[in-house]
Amino acid sequence: MRNPHSLLSSLNRHPALTLALLALILRLLFVWVLDPSPRFEGGDTNWYMQNGRDLVTTGKTAGPLQTPPLYLLLTGIVQVLVPGGPSEGRAYNDAEMQTMRTLQSVLGAALVASAVMLGRRLFSARVGVWTGAVLAISPALIVESGNLITETVFLAFIFAGLAIYAVALDTRRAVHYAAAGALLALATLTRAVFLLFPLLLIAHLRLARHRGWARPALVLLISYAALVSTWTVYNLAVWQRLVIGGDGLLGFVYQGATGKASPREVDERLGIAPEQDDRRDEVLRERVREHILDDPAGWAAHRLKELVGAILQPHNTVYFKGESIRDAAADWLRHDRSFAGLRDLTHIESFWPKLSLYVFHYAGLISGVAGMIGARRRWRALLPLYGLIAYFAGIHLVLLALPRYLFPTYPALWLFGVAWLISRLRR
Image 1 (spheres, rainbow, N blue to C red):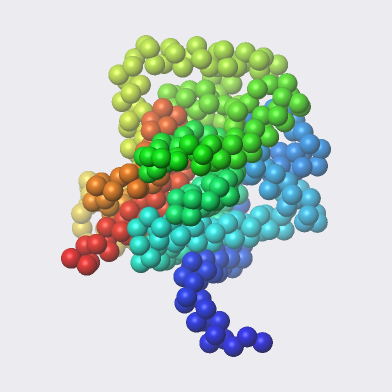
Image 2: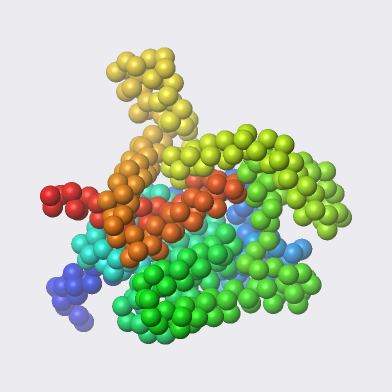
């Protein structure tokens, strides 16, 4: 049996592994001990589980899917491997739910390891370690591992791809560029909104390597396109329709103009019956054109307001029950401002978990923006991180913007923020 001191020494020499283990332990504690039986509200979780089961067991779903398949495949495989079936009006049982949440805890730990690697390659070993430590204990990321939605899987593949891409820049080995392309493709097959991001990495290769950039760019793109195209081939073969990455883009543009709604609610607004699904895109294009052209200034103001609101609102506060502490604090500022009233705020249900989300969110946001400004002279080297943040902010300036959709910028902001904080402490 291996000596425990030898094992501890080995972990100290491998900070990515150490912090990934810490992250895994904290996530498993949350999933299995603190919140082992959550009741997920809304239809997203049931929808993923039901369609995942159908896709894996029959190869088809009730109808063509707008979303890419990877998360559905993961949920479907879990449901096939774990005994049991749907229970209590849900499309899944507790064992299936906990197995999926455990898998997401592992992927959450992988995200931490990727952040350590990325920080080390783009900044310094110290930045990588401290960023990994922050992400390991981040309440939003711990809670996210327990949510049966796409974000944990999405973030894991995004930052694993960026970490391997950073390795490839140093090694210049084709296999690393191919691996980066494959991992980024898996991210796109989780959320199609990521489809165009690899083009930014091609631009970065052109800037970073004035000569010899075309071959690694081609390797990355071929690897990426080959994997993403599997979903295109499937849709052509099964549903006779052309899909690249995912469908439903117009629906998100429409929701960006009119407000968040389920697919059924969107169809009701559009006046489309289920048997008229072939008219959906045509009607959506017409309505989107009307909303934008009839009042372009109003549409632009609405999009900017929604995007800023999504940036300022911490992700996962809705996971906890109780009154919004932001609304309660605003009410206290307007009408009370007494110490007793401030003390009463702490008695709101789930106050402390929600407060921790706000603290981490705004610490990362403020230090991250400061870090982006401070590192501006290194923008060419750091373009993958700058580009990631700009990509998600820019695309959701047009599409529906929610804190959940902007969450992929969270680890990138902390990388910038930790680098800035360390530089300030040195001074």
